[in-house]
Image 1 (cartoon, rainbow, N blue to C red):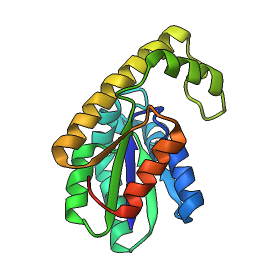
Image 2: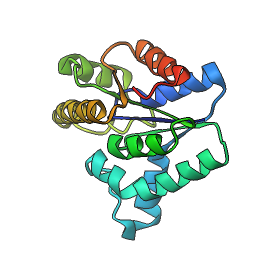
Image 3: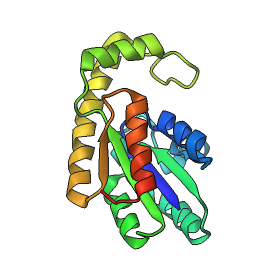
Image 4: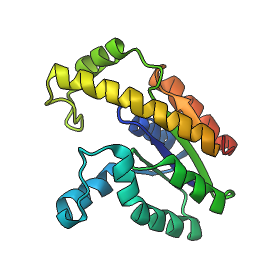
Length: 188
């Protein structure tokens, strides 16, 4: 079974993937590493980590789809997670392999932006926290962009029949909902 977990930045995808690994033993791979490999290793690819996530998802989909197809055909049990998954492409892929793929997207369409800012500033700062070097004003603007992106992803998920989980709640609650969906196996 191949599990695909997409969604917006800061929505808890990696934490959900880690909890999924802990509960199921199923490993995961963050597509951020693939994106950075293209951005830094193949600059002519023009993959820019600072670009709109859905644009980067479009650029990387041929590679992600090829990887995912090989994983499904080889019956690899794995989770791929990242902002680099676009709901339209994931829905098409799911429809090709409905018995071998589970997909879910998470986002922050209903978040309290002031609370999210405080969380980022209070709990952020680890080495893998890409927001730690930015000004407060930039972080506030990024939170607004994430909220708008979440609304877009939620709407597309509804259109194509994919599960969307709102991540404004505690991340452990969100993770539980995602994992329950993955283990239940429904498309939506």
